[in-house]
Length: 439
Image (cartoon, rainbow, N blue to C red; front, side, top):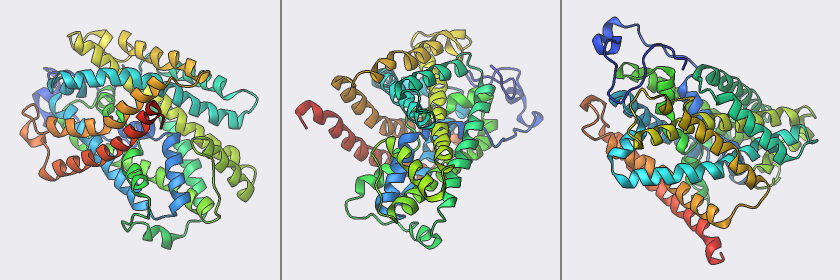
């Protein structure tokens, strides 16, 4: 694996003989780069579904929920910082921490990562397929989707972090130019933008508000941050300040993306009383509206941004969650830290990439089996409170050196986040099981 330095994450902390283990002051000062693991995890978490949800909020309520988008950025900063702080402070992976909490956490994650991967693989590939079909309609969505899945597999198969990060940097740049450019083109009303920073919940918009504050920007991929820190070579407390800067910058950038989509929804749809299709098809509709209003070139330009958002999620999950799965299997088998099957490019890592890519292709031809939808919906709705609550326990435990444990206000934030996600999760759980009872 390519790293910025020679330090590798181990379950026991800094390896003997490294600058971190001998003398922090004698080592080269850690340097932060604009593109790092934080921006990778943020870009992975922002997919087509997030863009649609934010755009629809703008089209329904104008700028009234802008404050909820900003709150969502703060929530993600807190969760990802906790995952990163655990990794740097203890030298242990997040799954190793979950294992220490008991069998329940292991069983939950094991079931979740398998079922979620199967369903997510189809959804992620479909999103890319829809964007490519909009750009090149000669090939059906499902075939574009399968090609995207295989392309993602090939890009991350060997597990090299630096090439992966470089590709993500290009996709992030494309997203910024197209999505933010589209928002600027609509000439937002700055007075209304400022008014949207005042916390107000419109009538009937409680769940929409919670969804924007908590549901935009990733779920399981937030926990992958620690693994990407290790791949980057940031693996000891010496990198704590760099990690925090990296994480904060990343989610400020992600906030700019989602605010841009809210502006597009508010200025392009809300002000004109227009409606678009539900789901990812809505992004194709927006491309058509942009073309009608600002010129034919805007449709392909926006669809390129749509592609960048969806494909960055594909390769981010194919790389990051595969690292988590490899650690899960290796830890359960008690393999040593240096075992090649544990890391990127190893046997278990590749198993999961194959699982994400090929079995879900069957769902591109068939309606999703009802049982899969129910199980996926139930597990998915509860992952974010699982992450918030487990971080609450782990980051106050004796496994973390006292100086790196949670401050009191961080604990308050995590409790509030857990409650918020439990409300959201309960709502999603009801929707997931409704078909079983004929709802």
